[in-house]
Length: 421
Image 1: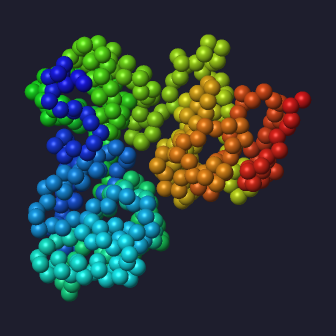
Image 2 (image 1 turned 180 degrees about the vertical axis):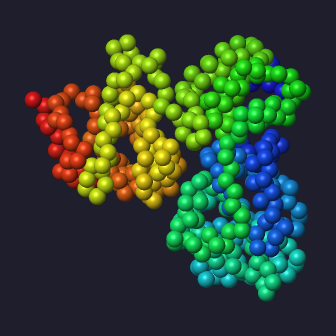
Image 3 (image 1 turned 30 degrees about the vertical axis):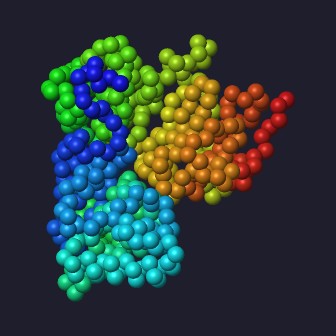
């Protein structure tokens, strides 16, 4: 690798959550203090949220490394579990083998363990990462666990960490009792420009740069433009830059290497203040006979049997979600803040799930990524979305977005299209 060339003793931009590389911005320091408060207070129930790649897991690993020996921890990272499986997983973390137990026995064993630890003067902490994936039924089990107490104090301390959808769940009417148990909430946002600069320098210093300037001064602003200050994206781009410089046998990264890294990653500028990308300028990648404004396809969005939106798809990226900062907003509780995206190229169109809570479905099958074909119907929350390929060699009548007959076809997944003449 490039360590010898850059005179480093460790890889500075690995994606694994290594506590020694943690950069404590003001936000990260505050989130860590909230985690630590679960140990100080007997009613500790803390929720930490943040966008993908904001550094939640690294914070958790750092926090765990610094805990005293009198704290017993159960750390749950796999969260797509049934209520019983979740409780069994908690017991496994505490050293039990509960897989032959039924739920009443699991609960009795867990309550007895908590009582014994309290009597021995030990604190018990449950940490759940990726908690946005927990079902309401599992979150109700978490609420019940948080209520285990002696006459004076709670026995179990709890930290829930997850993406912003976790807040949406906690704010729902179904989980109001759980929400009332939460003592502290904190949302971890991306780094500011100044923090990102310090973050890069900090990681290089920990890796052994000894103050040497490896990234040229003029590269930082562009790195921020393409990463939005999201730590994971910063790591990915900076590591790719170092590889580009290594390929040229250069021990510094200039704008030339940064531009090469951006092209290699095929990234577009990060939209300021959001967790999504702006529509990219793909004009330079188009074939000579295809213009950047060329319509590749269309999507028709239907709800309750009626077409509500028709949108042309040109080369670029269309982000779909519940909040107004999306390119296409669907105001529904079944839609995540940033639910999915459609990436359109001159010769292809792909829909991708953005780690949404309810997912996207094609032919009743949940998919993470799907190459759209003419006539495909994608279920997004409680909306149906049909893809129409404008490159198909057939004649098509103009479809009225208010045509309920066509929308009804979307609902059933079957639409009669005009035949070629």
